[in-house]
Amino acid sequence: QVQLVESGGGLVQAGGSLRLSCAASGRTFSSRAMAWFRQAPGKERGFVAAASWSGSSKYYADSVKGRFTISRDTAKNTVYLQMNSLKPEDTAVYYCAAGAPYDTPSRTSNNYAYWGQGTQVAVSS
Image (cartoon, rainbow, N blue to C red; front, side, top):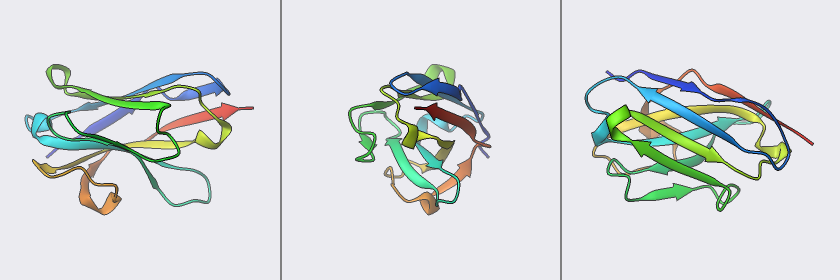
């Protein structure tokens, strides 16, 4: 069982930065691929970024590539999403997700068994 708790959301002006954190419980964090998804009002949940269990492989949605960075700290059981050069279209609820042990990171939400409650990010123009 894995529990995920996101934090770090808030209101920021366009061009600003935020860092989201996702604290995970459980001893299997280091063996799981981790990902961030987001859902804007009236839209489906979409992939943002993912990191392999080792952290050596990282994947990004085209819309955030070059602006967002996913990282993980195994000692702290935490995964981060550094978001720079934020745009109004980045406004959404951001969710952290954990995959099966040693599974390959996926861009598909169905491949993630554990989810956090979400944290709101709002970017004003």
